[in-house]
Image: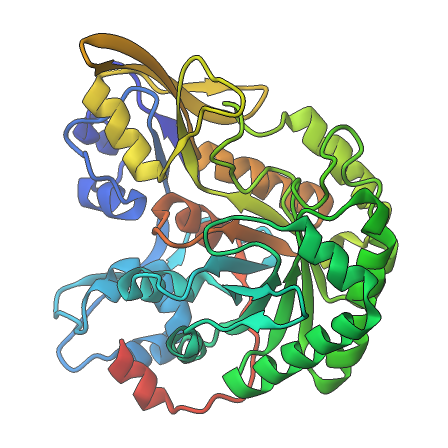
Length: 444
Protein backbone atom coordinates (compact mmCIF):
# COMPACT_ATOMS: atom_id res chain seq x y z
CA UNK A 1 0.00 0.00 0.00
CA UNK A 2 1.33 3.38 -1.05
CA UNK A 3 0.08 6.94 -0.56
CA UNK A 4 0.69 9.33 -3.43
CA UNK A 5 0.53 13.09 -2.85
CA UNK A 6 -0.67 14.93 -5.94
CA UNK A 7 2.07 17.19 -7.31
CA UNK A 8 1.92 20.06 -9.82
CA UNK A 9 1.42 18.58 -13.28
CA UNK A 10 -0.01 15.29 -12.02
CA UNK A 11 -3.09 13.88 -13.72
CA UNK A 12 -5.08 10.79 -12.90
CA UNK A 13 -3.69 9.26 -16.09
CA UNK A 14 -0.06 10.01 -15.24
CA UNK A 15 -0.46 8.71 -11.68
CA UNK A 16 -2.10 5.49 -12.86
CA UNK A 17 0.62 4.97 -15.45
CA UNK A 18 3.39 5.68 -12.94
CA UNK A 19 2.14 3.00 -10.54
CA UNK A 20 0.97 0.54 -13.16
CA UNK A 21 -2.69 0.55 -12.13
CA UNK A 22 -5.93 1.21 -13.98
CA UNK A 23 -7.46 4.68 -13.85
CA UNK A 24 -10.88 3.27 -13.02
CA UNK A 25 -9.42 1.33 -10.09
CA UNK A 26 -7.78 4.46 -8.65
CA UNK A 27 -10.98 6.47 -8.96
CA UNK A 28 -13.19 3.72 -7.50
CA UNK A 29 -10.88 2.66 -4.67
CA UNK A 30 -10.28 6.23 -3.47
CA UNK A 31 -13.80 7.54 -3.98
CA UNK A 32 -12.40 10.36 -6.12
CA UNK A 33 -15.07 12.80 -7.26
CA UNK A 34 -12.70 15.02 -9.26
CA UNK A 35 -10.53 12.51 -11.21
CA UNK A 36 -9.69 14.85 -14.06
CA UNK A 37 -9.28 17.93 -11.90
CA UNK A 38 -7.08 16.87 -8.99
CA UNK A 39 -5.99 19.17 -6.17
CA UNK A 40 -2.30 19.64 -5.45
CA UNK A 41 -1.68 18.02 -2.06
CA UNK A 42 -4.59 15.58 -2.40
CA UNK A 43 -3.81 11.99 -1.35
CA UNK A 44 -4.35 8.91 -3.51
CA UNK A 45 -3.95 5.41 -2.10
CA UNK A 46 -2.35 2.78 -4.33
CA UNK A 47 -3.06 -0.90 -3.69
CA UNK A 48 -2.33 -3.95 -5.78
CA UNK A 49 -4.58 -7.02 -5.94
CA UNK A 50 -2.92 -10.42 -5.94
CA UNK A 51 -5.93 -12.32 -7.28
CA UNK A 52 -8.76 -11.18 -9.53
CA UNK A 53 -11.81 -13.13 -10.70
CA UNK A 54 -13.93 -12.45 -13.78
CA UNK A 55 -17.63 -12.97 -13.15
CA UNK A 56 -19.34 -15.67 -15.23
CA UNK A 57 -23.00 -16.25 -16.03
CA UNK A 58 -24.76 -17.87 -13.05
CA UNK A 59 -22.21 -16.72 -10.44
CA UNK A 60 -23.41 -15.55 -7.05
CA UNK A 61 -21.52 -13.90 -4.24
CA UNK A 62 -21.75 -17.11 -2.26
CA UNK A 63 -20.49 -19.32 -5.09
CA UNK A 64 -17.51 -17.05 -5.77
CA UNK A 65 -16.65 -16.81 -2.07
CA UNK A 66 -16.81 -20.59 -1.70
CA UNK A 67 -14.64 -21.08 -4.77
CA UNK A 68 -11.82 -19.05 -3.22
CA UNK A 69 -12.43 -20.10 0.39
CA UNK A 70 -13.30 -16.61 1.57
CA UNK A 71 -16.47 -15.19 3.07
CA UNK A 72 -19.12 -13.12 1.32
CA UNK A 73 -18.24 -10.31 3.71
CA UNK A 74 -14.58 -10.42 2.58
CA UNK A 75 -15.74 -10.25 -1.03
CA UNK A 76 -17.81 -7.17 -0.22
CA UNK A 77 -14.85 -5.54 1.56
CA UNK A 78 -12.58 -6.05 -1.42
CA UNK A 79 -15.23 -4.80 -3.86
CA UNK A 80 -17.24 -1.98 -2.22
CA UNK A 81 -18.81 -1.19 -5.59
CA UNK A 82 -20.96 -4.33 -5.11
CA UNK A 83 -22.98 -2.41 -2.53
CA UNK A 84 -24.15 -0.08 -5.30
CA UNK A 85 -25.67 -2.92 -7.33
CA UNK A 86 -27.98 -5.81 -6.62
CA UNK A 87 -26.59 -7.94 -9.44
CA UNK A 88 -23.32 -9.42 -10.67
CA UNK A 89 -22.48 -8.70 -14.28
CA UNK A 90 -20.69 -11.31 -16.43
CA UNK A 91 -17.27 -9.97 -17.38
CA UNK A 92 -17.05 -7.86 -14.22
CA UNK A 93 -13.70 -8.11 -12.39
CA UNK A 94 -13.70 -8.77 -8.65
CA UNK A 95 -10.75 -8.49 -6.27
CA UNK A 96 -10.29 -11.70 -4.31
CA UNK A 97 -7.14 -10.79 -2.38
CA UNK A 98 -4.64 -7.95 -2.06
CA UNK A 99 -0.90 -8.34 -2.57
CA UNK A 100 -0.01 -6.75 0.78
CA UNK A 101 0.71 -9.17 3.63
CA UNK A 102 -1.83 -8.54 6.39
CA UNK A 103 -0.10 -6.93 9.38
CA UNK A 104 -2.40 -8.35 12.06
CA UNK A 105 -6.05 -9.04 12.88
CA UNK A 106 -8.01 -6.10 14.27
CA UNK A 107 -11.50 -5.14 15.34
CA UNK A 108 -13.20 -2.10 13.87
CA UNK A 109 -16.00 -0.03 15.35
CA UNK A 110 -18.04 2.64 13.65
CA UNK A 111 -20.32 5.21 15.27
CA UNK A 112 -23.55 6.03 13.46
CA UNK A 113 -26.85 7.77 14.03
CA UNK A 114 -29.98 5.68 13.33
CA UNK A 115 -30.87 7.96 10.39
CA UNK A 116 -27.68 7.14 8.44
CA UNK A 117 -28.24 6.81 4.69
CA UNK A 118 -28.95 3.12 4.11
CA UNK A 119 -26.73 2.92 1.02
CA UNK A 120 -23.77 4.30 2.99
CA UNK A 121 -24.54 1.94 5.86
CA UNK A 122 -24.63 -1.14 3.64
CA UNK A 123 -21.41 -0.10 1.93
CA UNK A 124 -19.64 0.38 5.26
CA UNK A 125 -20.91 -2.55 7.32
CA UNK A 126 -18.65 -5.18 5.69
CA UNK A 127 -15.65 -3.35 7.20
CA UNK A 128 -17.04 -3.33 10.74
CA UNK A 129 -16.76 -5.68 13.67
CA UNK A 130 -19.02 -3.52 15.84
CA UNK A 131 -21.59 -0.82 15.08
CA UNK A 132 -22.14 1.68 17.92
CA UNK A 133 -25.53 3.35 17.49
CA UNK A 134 -25.67 6.91 18.81
CA UNK A 135 -27.23 7.36 21.29
CA UNK A 136 -29.46 6.67 24.28
CA UNK A 137 -29.26 9.94 26.17
CA UNK A 138 -29.38 9.69 29.97
CA UNK A 139 -32.03 11.78 31.72
CA UNK A 140 -31.74 13.43 35.13
CA UNK A 141 -33.86 10.65 36.69
CA UNK A 142 -31.83 7.78 35.22
CA UNK A 143 -34.09 7.22 32.23
CA UNK A 144 -33.01 6.79 28.60
CA UNK A 145 -34.38 8.80 25.69
CA UNK A 146 -35.57 6.21 23.18
CA UNK A 147 -34.37 6.24 19.55
CA UNK A 148 -35.74 4.68 16.36
CA UNK A 149 -32.99 2.07 15.92
CA UNK A 150 -34.68 -1.24 15.10
CA UNK A 151 -33.89 -1.08 11.38
CA UNK A 152 -30.22 -0.21 11.81
CA UNK A 153 -29.85 -3.07 14.33
CA UNK A 154 -31.47 -5.50 11.90
CA UNK A 155 -29.25 -4.35 9.02
CA UNK A 156 -26.09 -4.67 11.12
CA UNK A 157 -26.96 -8.27 11.96
CA UNK A 158 -27.52 -9.05 8.27
CA UNK A 159 -23.84 -8.27 7.74
CA UNK A 160 -22.66 -10.19 10.84
CA UNK A 161 -21.81 -6.90 12.57
CA UNK A 162 -22.32 -6.69 16.34
CA UNK A 163 -24.77 -3.86 17.22
CA UNK A 164 -23.82 -1.92 20.35
CA UNK A 165 -26.07 0.61 22.10
CA UNK A 166 -24.41 3.85 23.16
CA UNK A 167 -25.41 5.30 26.52
CA UNK A 168 -24.36 8.92 26.70
CA UNK A 169 -24.88 12.29 28.35
CA UNK A 170 -24.46 13.90 24.92
CA UNK A 171 -27.55 14.62 22.83
CA UNK A 172 -27.90 14.10 19.07
CA UNK A 173 -27.08 17.82 18.71
CA UNK A 174 -23.77 17.25 20.49
CA UNK A 175 -24.76 19.06 23.67
CA UNK A 176 -23.38 17.66 26.92
CA UNK A 177 -24.69 18.04 30.44
CA UNK A 178 -22.30 17.58 33.38
CA UNK A 179 -25.20 18.09 35.81
CA UNK A 180 -26.83 14.88 34.58
CA UNK A 181 -23.50 13.05 34.80
CA UNK A 182 -22.97 14.29 38.34
CA UNK A 183 -26.49 13.32 39.46
CA UNK A 184 -26.29 9.79 38.06
CA UNK A 185 -22.78 9.13 39.32
CA UNK A 186 -23.49 10.32 42.86
CA UNK A 187 -27.05 9.06 43.35
CA UNK A 188 -27.18 5.32 43.99
CA UNK A 189 -30.91 5.02 43.37
CA UNK A 190 -30.79 6.79 40.00
CA UNK A 191 -27.69 4.81 39.04
CA UNK A 192 -29.59 1.56 39.64
CA UNK A 193 -32.57 2.84 37.67
CA UNK A 194 -30.26 3.64 34.76
CA UNK A 195 -28.70 0.16 34.84
CA UNK A 196 -32.18 -1.44 34.78
CA UNK A 197 -33.11 0.74 31.80
CA UNK A 198 -29.92 -0.28 29.97
CA UNK A 199 -30.75 -3.93 30.51
CA UNK A 200 -34.28 -3.37 29.24
CA UNK A 201 -33.04 -1.81 25.98
CA UNK A 202 -30.47 -4.57 25.47
CA UNK A 203 -33.17 -7.21 25.81
CA UNK A 204 -35.98 -5.54 23.87
CA UNK A 205 -33.98 -4.04 21.00
CA UNK A 206 -31.58 -6.92 20.39
CA UNK A 207 -28.27 -5.18 21.06
CA UNK A 208 -25.26 -7.33 21.94
CA UNK A 209 -23.61 -4.86 24.27
CA UNK A 210 -23.32 -1.34 25.60
CA UNK A 211 -20.87 1.46 24.92
CA UNK A 212 -20.70 3.86 27.90
CA UNK A 213 -19.86 7.29 26.53
CA UNK A 214 -20.26 9.78 29.36
CA UNK A 215 -18.83 13.25 28.84
CA UNK A 216 -18.49 16.45 30.83
CA UNK A 217 -17.66 14.67 34.07
CA UNK A 218 -16.57 16.80 36.99
CA UNK A 219 -13.03 16.02 38.18
CA UNK A 220 -14.47 15.41 41.65
CA UNK A 221 -16.70 12.66 40.20
CA UNK A 222 -14.00 10.62 38.45
CA UNK A 223 -13.87 7.88 41.08
CA UNK A 224 -17.66 7.65 40.99
CA UNK A 225 -17.34 7.43 37.20
CA UNK A 226 -15.06 4.39 37.50
CA UNK A 227 -17.38 2.85 40.08
CA UNK A 228 -20.34 3.36 37.74
CA UNK A 229 -18.59 1.51 34.92
CA UNK A 230 -17.84 -1.37 37.29
CA UNK A 231 -21.48 -1.46 38.44
CA UNK A 232 -22.81 -1.57 34.85
CA UNK A 233 -20.30 -4.26 33.92
CA UNK A 234 -21.17 -6.41 36.92
CA UNK A 235 -24.85 -6.17 36.03
CA UNK A 236 -24.78 -6.98 32.31
CA UNK A 237 -21.56 -8.81 31.46
CA UNK A 238 -22.58 -12.04 33.28
CA UNK A 239 -25.59 -12.10 30.93
CA UNK A 240 -23.26 -12.34 27.93
CA UNK A 241 -23.25 -8.70 26.81
CA UNK A 242 -20.17 -6.73 25.73
CA UNK A 243 -19.18 -3.65 27.74
CA UNK A 244 -17.19 -0.87 26.05
CA UNK A 245 -16.17 2.54 27.34
CA UNK A 246 -15.53 5.52 25.06
CA UNK A 247 -13.24 8.24 26.38
CA UNK A 248 -12.54 11.50 24.56
CA UNK A 249 -10.76 14.70 25.55
CA UNK A 250 -14.17 16.08 26.58
CA UNK A 251 -14.83 13.26 29.05
CA UNK A 252 -13.92 15.55 31.93
CA UNK A 253 -14.60 19.24 32.31
CA UNK A 254 -10.98 20.18 32.99
CA UNK A 255 -9.23 19.44 29.72
CA UNK A 256 -5.84 20.99 30.29
CA UNK A 257 -2.69 19.00 30.92
CA UNK A 258 -3.52 15.79 32.76
CA UNK A 259 -6.98 15.08 31.35
CA UNK A 260 -6.47 11.31 31.20
CA UNK A 261 -4.27 10.78 34.23
CA UNK A 262 -7.15 11.58 36.60
CA UNK A 263 -9.23 8.65 35.34
CA UNK A 264 -8.82 5.25 36.98
CA UNK A 265 -8.01 3.39 33.79
CA UNK A 266 -6.66 0.38 35.64
CA UNK A 267 -10.05 -0.30 37.21
CA UNK A 268 -11.91 0.36 33.96
CA UNK A 269 -9.59 -1.84 31.93
CA UNK A 270 -9.87 -4.68 34.40
CA UNK A 271 -13.63 -5.12 34.09
CA UNK A 272 -14.63 -3.99 30.58
CA UNK A 273 -14.09 -5.66 27.22
CA UNK A 274 -12.51 -2.66 25.51
CA UNK A 275 -11.72 1.02 25.97
CA UNK A 276 -12.38 3.13 22.87
CA UNK A 277 -9.80 5.86 23.24
CA UNK A 278 -10.10 9.04 21.20
CA UNK A 279 -6.81 10.84 21.86
CA UNK A 280 -7.76 13.15 19.01
CA UNK A 281 -10.95 15.07 19.71
CA UNK A 282 -14.16 13.94 18.06
CA UNK A 283 -14.51 17.44 16.73
CA UNK A 284 -15.99 20.51 18.26
CA UNK A 285 -17.78 23.27 16.34
CA UNK A 286 -16.88 26.01 18.83
CA UNK A 287 -13.25 24.99 19.45
CA UNK A 288 -10.38 27.10 18.08
CA UNK A 289 -8.82 26.10 14.74
CA UNK A 290 -6.22 23.37 14.74
CA UNK A 291 -5.35 19.79 13.97
CA UNK A 292 -6.49 18.46 17.37
CA UNK A 293 -3.39 17.58 19.42
CA UNK A 294 0.18 17.05 18.32
CA UNK A 295 1.63 13.61 17.77
CA UNK A 296 4.05 14.14 20.67
CA UNK A 297 1.20 14.88 23.08
CA UNK A 298 -0.75 11.91 21.72
CA UNK A 299 2.19 9.65 22.50
CA UNK A 300 2.37 10.98 26.04
CA UNK A 301 -1.26 9.96 26.55
CA UNK A 302 -0.77 6.56 24.93
CA UNK A 303 2.42 5.83 26.85
CA UNK A 304 0.60 6.53 30.10
CA UNK A 305 -2.64 4.71 29.34
CA UNK A 306 -0.88 1.54 28.19
CA UNK A 307 0.66 1.28 31.66
CA UNK A 308 -2.89 1.14 33.05
CA UNK A 309 -4.81 -0.94 30.49
CA UNK A 310 -3.47 -3.89 28.48
CA UNK A 311 -2.90 -2.70 24.90
CA UNK A 312 -4.99 -5.53 23.52
CA UNK A 313 -8.03 -4.06 25.32
CA UNK A 314 -7.69 -0.63 23.70
CA UNK A 315 -9.26 0.51 20.43
CA UNK A 316 -7.77 3.77 19.19
CA UNK A 317 -10.21 6.34 17.86
CA UNK A 318 -10.10 8.31 14.63
CA UNK A 319 -12.53 11.22 14.19
CA UNK A 320 -12.96 11.82 10.46
CA UNK A 321 -14.91 15.08 10.52
CA UNK A 322 -13.21 18.17 9.09
CA UNK A 323 -13.85 21.78 10.11
CA UNK A 324 -13.87 25.11 8.28
CA UNK A 325 -13.16 28.21 10.42
CA UNK A 326 -13.49 31.86 9.52
CA UNK A 327 -10.49 33.89 10.73
CA UNK A 328 -9.71 35.57 12.99
CA UNK A 329 -11.14 33.17 15.56
CA UNK A 330 -13.03 34.93 18.38
CA UNK A 331 -13.45 32.90 21.56
CA UNK A 332 -17.13 32.47 22.47
CA UNK A 333 -18.35 33.84 19.13
CA UNK A 334 -16.69 31.94 16.31
CA UNK A 335 -17.93 28.56 15.16
CA UNK A 336 -16.77 26.11 12.53
CA UNK A 337 -18.66 24.43 9.71
CA UNK A 338 -18.18 20.66 9.64
CA UNK A 339 -17.34 18.89 6.40
CA UNK A 340 -16.22 15.52 5.06
CA UNK A 341 -12.91 14.65 3.47
CA UNK A 342 -14.54 14.67 0.05
CA UNK A 343 -16.21 18.04 0.57
CA UNK A 344 -12.94 19.49 1.91
CA UNK A 345 -11.12 18.44 -1.26
CA UNK A 346 -13.94 19.79 -3.41
CA UNK A 347 -13.75 23.10 -1.52
CA UNK A 348 -9.99 23.31 -2.09
CA UNK A 349 -10.56 22.75 -5.81
CA UNK A 350 -13.34 25.34 -5.93
CA UNK A 351 -11.12 27.93 -4.24
CA UNK A 352 -8.08 26.89 -6.32
CA UNK A 353 -5.78 26.41 -3.33
CA UNK A 354 -3.10 23.86 -2.44
CA UNK A 355 -3.68 21.32 0.33
CA UNK A 356 -0.83 21.48 2.85
CA UNK A 357 0.20 19.05 5.57
CA UNK A 358 1.30 19.83 9.13
CA UNK A 359 3.92 17.34 10.33
CA UNK A 360 3.41 18.35 13.96
CA UNK A 361 -0.33 17.70 13.99
CA UNK A 362 -0.05 15.07 11.24
CA UNK A 363 -3.09 16.53 9.51
CA UNK A 364 -3.92 18.22 6.16
CA UNK A 365 -5.15 21.80 6.01
CA UNK A 366 -5.55 24.75 3.66
CA UNK A 367 -6.41 28.43 3.66
CA UNK A 368 -8.86 30.11 1.30
CA UNK A 369 -10.52 33.50 0.82
CA UNK A 370 -14.27 33.94 0.79
CA UNK A 371 -15.89 37.14 -0.45
CA UNK A 372 -18.57 38.35 1.96
CA UNK A 373 -20.39 41.59 1.18
CA UNK A 374 -17.50 42.67 -1.05
CA UNK A 375 -14.77 41.95 1.51
CA UNK A 376 -12.28 39.08 1.45
CA UNK A 377 -12.53 36.89 4.56
CA UNK A 378 -9.81 34.35 5.36
CA UNK A 379 -10.75 30.75 6.24
CA UNK A 380 -8.74 27.76 7.39
CA UNK A 381 -9.84 24.14 6.93
CA UNK A 382 -8.46 21.16 8.84
CA UNK A 383 -9.59 17.69 7.82
CA UNK A 384 -8.53 14.02 7.52
CA UNK A 385 -7.05 12.15 4.58
CA UNK A 386 -5.14 8.91 3.92
CA UNK A 387 -2.15 10.20 5.91
CA UNK A 388 -4.36 10.68 8.96
CA UNK A 389 -5.55 7.09 8.68
CA UNK A 390 -1.94 5.91 8.31
CA UNK A 391 -0.99 7.66 11.59
CA UNK A 392 -3.67 5.75 13.50
CA UNK A 393 -2.80 2.54 11.67
CA UNK A 394 0.82 2.95 12.78
CA UNK A 395 -0.32 3.44 16.38
CA UNK A 396 -2.25 0.16 16.21
CA UNK A 397 0.93 -1.70 15.29
CA UNK A 398 3.29 0.20 17.55
CA UNK A 399 1.16 -0.26 20.68
CA UNK A 400 -0.46 -3.55 19.67
CA UNK A 401 -3.99 -2.16 20.07
CA UNK A 402 -6.95 -4.41 19.33
CA UNK A 403 -8.20 -2.14 16.60
CA UNK A 404 -9.73 1.18 15.59
CA UNK A 405 -12.96 3.08 16.17
CA UNK A 406 -14.14 5.90 13.95
CA UNK A 407 -16.38 8.87 14.63
CA UNK A 408 -18.36 8.62 12.47
CA UNK A 409 -19.51 6.57 9.45
CA UNK A 410 -22.32 8.86 8.32
CA UNK A 411 -20.33 9.45 5.12
CA UNK A 412 -18.36 6.79 3.29
CA UNK A 413 -14.60 7.39 3.68
CA UNK A 414 -13.21 5.22 0.88
CA UNK A 415 -9.51 5.74 1.63
CA UNK A 416 -9.86 4.77 5.29
CA UNK A 417 -11.51 1.46 4.51
CA UNK A 418 -9.13 0.77 1.62
CA UNK A 419 -6.10 1.19 3.88
CA UNK A 420 -7.50 -0.84 6.75
CA UNK A 421 -8.87 -3.64 4.57
CA UNK A 422 -5.70 -4.04 2.50
CA UNK A 423 -3.41 -3.96 5.55
CA UNK A 424 -5.37 -5.87 8.21
CA UNK A 425 -7.66 -8.84 8.67
CA UNK A 426 -10.86 -7.35 10.07
CA UNK A 427 -12.34 -9.60 12.72
CA UNK A 428 -15.93 -10.79 12.43
CA UNK A 429 -17.57 -11.98 15.65
CA UNK A 430 -19.38 -15.24 15.04
CA UNK A 431 -22.81 -15.40 16.61
CA UNK A 432 -26.10 -17.13 15.90
CA UNK A 433 -27.98 -15.15 13.26
CA UNK A 434 -31.73 -15.05 12.79
CA UNK A 435 -31.59 -15.14 9.00
CA UNK A 436 -30.36 -17.52 6.35
CA UNK A 437 -27.53 -17.10 3.85
CA UNK A 438 -30.16 -16.80 1.11
CA UNK A 439 -31.75 -13.85 2.90
CA UNK A 440 -28.34 -12.17 3.07
CA UNK A 441 -27.82 -12.65 -0.63
CA UNK A 442 -31.25 -11.24 -1.44
CA UNK A 443 -30.50 -8.19 0.70
CA UNK A 444 -27.35 -7.50 -1.29
